[in-house]
Length: 360
Image (cartoon, rainbow, N blue to C red; front, side):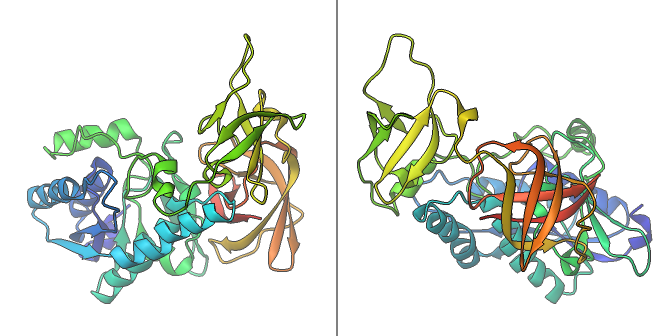
């Protein structure tokens, strides 16, 4: 499938993980002129730093594949468009999606722009997604990855035809076990490396501890559904709908069950909790989204049924779409739980990721 692009120049985002390593290997095997690029981003000094080890892993893979290696420094872009965005969203009580913004502004923003300016014909990453062009005048489609357990199209809904027309996802049609098998067969040092988790580039960390460095803690009350004070917390800003940790219950009973945050009142700095997260007071069949992007550049048919999800890896739910000026209302067949303002809602037509928007 890739052979028709032989000798084309492609810059591969190399994270130091197995997915991007195999992506680079497959592209070279297909005849591309491949350059590996490690993206160095901003990291706070209080978060465990692994970028040096990751960069070394990426360098080793490039050396093994005998391809050029380059380090691209995007600290300013990451701090402004991902970290600061995340902090500011929490400050106003919204639930951010930093991985979406990382893809939009860093991987398919600054990195993409850099690669094209350097003469690259394509940019490639190790995302479990696919692109497909069905005709000369038809748009490039963004598709789900064949490995449904790893599909990452949810995080790519902000991509436009400008990016998709010059993007390759070499492992999008491969399942994860096969990716590792290929890496082992080729003798890549990242074959057994564990997958990265947590926030894009920053990894896994305690979000409350992270935010506490930028947002001052303020003691508040935990309420039950009757409005009775049953505990305390250190700031409603730090908590998200559906969360079951991060607050202390002082009035417990012998048969106390796990409690979930179901509403937040930032003005009064209180949260309301319930034993049943499904009693979420923001449960609704209608969800309004703004900042909408359609990956194919074409608006969906408002008379047609589609499917959508409001969280990564959440099952897809059938829905219809209604346009509201620049915004859209999504009408689900069934009620949606734990709807969080600020999160991404992504819409699909079968295996095609049509696009999405930010929940208002």
